[in-house]
Every structure is written in C-alpha cells, then in structure tokens.
Image (tube, rainbow, N blue to C red; front, side, top):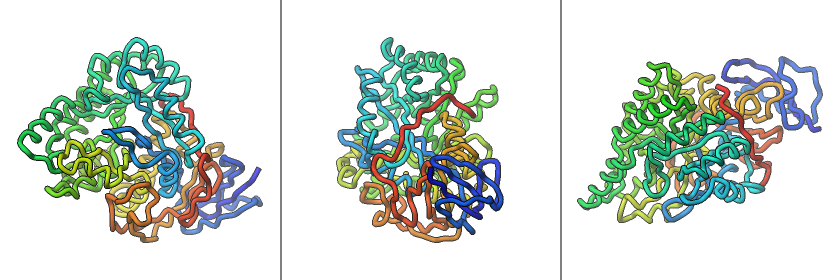
Length: 458
C-alpha cells in the first residue's frame, strides 16, 4: 500500500484550522498531527499552502440531452476539468424520459459515466413522470445509493411535473429516507411571458431574463417549501438566485421547517447587466437567469446566516455554435453555463480573499455541507482519519487569469474571460492519488468511481 506524507500545510475543515501533517495510506487518510514521526513513499512539503477537503459540486449536467442537443462536457472531460478546479466529486442528474422507467434512465447514464469519469461522481434521479410504476422504483434507486430525487416546476411537456405528482413523489421518498430537490420556478408563468415577448418580436437574450422575473422563482420556492412541509420530506432548492426566493425559505424557518438551499457561483458574482440586445448575452443564458446586485448581497448574507448551505455550479456547457441555435430567438438558446472548473477558485478569491466569507465557511459551502446533505459524509467532505484522501492544496497568494484558452472544460468560451483571481489550486489528490499537479492531469479516464450515497447526515 503506497503512502504519502503531506507536511506543514494549513489544514482547514469546517470545524478546525491548524498547521499539521497528513499521512495518506492507499486511498484514505491514516493520520493527522504535528510533525508526524513517519516515513512515507512520497512527501509533499505544503509550507505556505492551505489544504482543504476535495470540493463537491452537487449540481452538474454532463453529456445531457437538452433543447435538441447535448451539453458539451462528457463525464470524462467534465470530471477532469472539475479536478483541475479542486472539485473531486460531482453529482450529475439522470433524467427520466416521460413514459419510461427510472431504471432505463439510470442504465443510460451509467453507460456514459462508467469507465470514463476521471473524477468521482454520483447521480441524482430527476423524476419527470411520477406514476404507480415510478413509485415502485423509488426504493430500488435508494438501494442503488441514489437517495436524492429532482423535480422540475418548469419545462412543461418535457421535464415538469405537477403539484399532485410532487405530493406523491415526496410521500414516497420520505418513506425511504430520501431527499427531494426542486428547480423552483413557475413554468406556466414563464411560458406565458416567453410567448408574449416572442409575439412582440422581442427576441434578443435580454428577453430570456425578462421572461423569468423574480416573482416566478419566489412563488415556486414558497410552493415547494409548503408542499415539503406538508409531506415532511427532506427538501432542497437547487440554484436559488434571488431575495424573493430566499425570503420564502426564511418564512419556512418561522414554522421550524428546514429547507436546504443551494446557490451557484454565477449568481454570487455576475448580474443581469450582462444581458444586452446583442447576442453576446447568450453566454449567460441559463435558468434561472442572472439577477440584480441586491440579490447578490442577499445570497452572500444568506451563506453567512446559514440559510444557504451549498454553492454549486449548475454546470451545463454548450459550444458557441450550439448557443447560436437561438441567434434569432432567445427561447431557442440552449440554457447553460460552464463553471465546474472555476467554482472553488472564484469562491476563494472573491469570497475568502475579499472578506465576504470565512475560510471555514468556504469549506462548508464548497464541500462539507454537500457531503452531509447528500449522504457522503464522513467519507467525503472532510479531512479526518478514515476519510477518502480527497485533498486540495491552494497557494493563497498566487495570481492567475481565467481564459477559455487555458481552461480544461470542453467549451470554446468562458463566462469569466479575463477575470484575475488571487489564490490558485496547485495540487489535487483524489482517493490518495495525485490527480492534478501544477496544471497536469495525473490520473486517467476511468479513475473516477461511482459514490453510493446514504441518507441526509446534516
């Protein structure tokens, strides 16, 4: 069994911060302490570096069929790019096709990921057709280690389920100790606004934003929380973007309800001013859309208040040529944004280094909370004896610039082109192996493992 000793790093978890050594044996952490008196096969001097648990991005869409095309990152390219950005585990979404079973969908996604992923991965199951047969499959999915089930409150005719199906799904998932997540936007209202803008000849990317005003997200977030409260299921809102929606979560806490909340790095850092009347705004066409500066302030505050537990990405990249499918009509632009590689460095540079969040809060929202909410803790999400040796070494002072010319995602533009960051991820370990070092990938296709998950442990 190979061993690796990492010496003199500042080791930061969600509840500790100390300069010490870490001994890795095989795939797991064997010892942590000051000046460990051991000899190892390999030694890394981490003096001056910050060491945090491997990042967990619980919201990615790899090789996903959507709007007549597929997202451009595969499980191989997407998880490789994730590793370069310090994310060692990603949770992808399996999409049930209406009229088909959950098992069929899982088999399809397993065929894409098994033997190809470079980093570790797991799956959520998106339920788009809840019926008596689907109901019977919930327990089977939980037995497979897929304990979270996504619902869409938008995309009628493709992904959306109605409130009656939502209630039935929540009741069944609760029976088996699972978690229900929601894309919480009012699909009927959005479809109406899209139709109105198109009828008026308002077809530029700006009208994607104007078709999804804050009220569409606030209303659906409140409705989802209310139904979850009635059924008693563990609940989680994905990619929450705005003050109105977060206020619905605040309201839920007044009745002692717990609703987990994820936002995404783009909603913390980018705003709707990027949507103009030229096609350049298509780079940021995603759903929900970017919001206003007041919403950014709300989300940063929500993180520090403990109302927002997770920062993900909703990574769903499309090549520029794919985006141009909507050159003449915003409603035909494939929705999605590439970010899996930059989430942790952006959050460190713009969050920790600018005093918006503490270093320990950074660890919580980038790794630990996801591990707990999605049933991977303490195997993932922490630096402790027996945990997977998923470790990220950060040079906190190193400056670098984001560019499509140097990123590893399979997409030909960047939503953060030219951003200058302070704090660079230099070395990444995945299950004890150096996966990335000084910009070089050290593990290959198929090294990533499927992570079987348990119930919420938060």
